[in-house]
Image 1 (cartoon, rainbow, N blue to C red):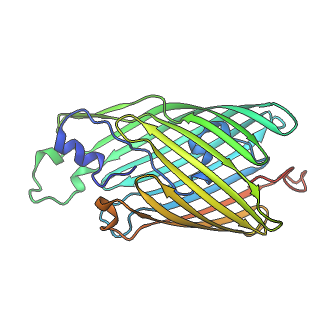
Image 2: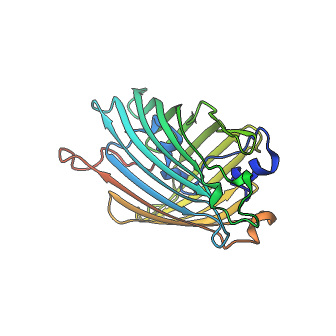
Length: 306
């Protein structure tokens, strides 16, 4: 979903209206659910804090680097959830820092399942520092103007969940904000993304569980893309998985549940595309998640695989 040529360079080359896929991606998407869908807030019966760092296309100059930090908790005895997301995404001279607040309302469908409706409000602090680029002609007027914008937005999502299954649809950014560059005589805009997430858990044996998940992304002017991941959970402690990103990458995931509350993870993925794979050393991610459980609860009411 990330292209080698950044939004900045495309603007320079085309000087026209641009439509491109822009949202940051993470191989640990199954731990980054709050950013993808605001209706996920507060669904783990705990104050959950998750951090992910991604170094994409290691060894490639100006390659994407991203971090996300999310926090969310149930309120009103589980009838609602609230959350905070911070996303940092840097590609070459272009940097996006997004701060989002999430709230949802949860409806109990039966003894084992709920349906949640969520809203997201966010601000994107966009900075395109193009005059930091190294040029043959440092006086080129086309590279003289940096672009800085604060782009407000809102999103929405629906999330169905039970102990061993979840499904959600969402649009994290509904509005396609435009930002102009007078020196380039160009207009570009944020692109609306549509997300579908699915996951379940199967018992293969007493000590082995299989957790397949899927993440489908759709946006205008880009091919439909899906991440399919299969994680094996061994003795409720060790996580070993493999992923496939359509038309782009394959990878592996490793994880360890240090305690019932604290999980660490690592992933490596390698681009299969000829345009990117032969010019870099793959992409790495580190994930940390902690569930802060209230003193009034001995433990989370039921297992939370998601």
